[in-house]
Length: 256
Image (tube, rainbow, N blue to C red):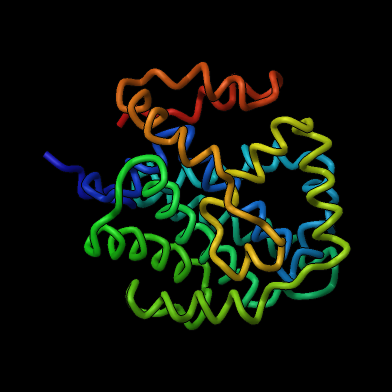
């Protein structure tokens, strides 16, 4: 019998997507590209934590996302409240407000890349499943008091496109953040990051980053999906992640 107290219903595909380590890594690979282009990326530099340890920030962000996606409603709402409070503390330290569109942009990244990761690694989502994914993030955004969120997924699509056209640009921080990605990942893993990003980022992001689609990685995906369906991909994930973070990656797989 389904627990009606979950913030995310047990039948929602978002639980399936976020229960797999590789999907989460793809979500944050794509988000890492779009984050770097966002016109509000300077907020991510204010505390210095992101450029100092981008992988560590990934796992701390995942921890909050998991608290929401796999929690009962009361606990999820508590986690969302804590996220708001953390951002308010940063705003107070900088004596400025984070613009509402910047909050909305981050939420939009999670929507787009959650769906993109599922379709890259598993199978296309149905229109109903996309609506279910969007509904969760919309509620999350509403609890964070993010204004002007479209009522459904179909109306969200053109709004996301408008965000891509107006809120992104290359800057010195874009180049610095990618430099930090390379420093912390190493050359080989960094190249894999770029290739993974190119498979899930939307065309405006690809154009700004001058990213081209890889020729080899798409050819390997059918084999990876075959192994993934048999839970035989852990060793591949270990090769793709620096040793210091392997235990954290292993912990991303959730039994639900």
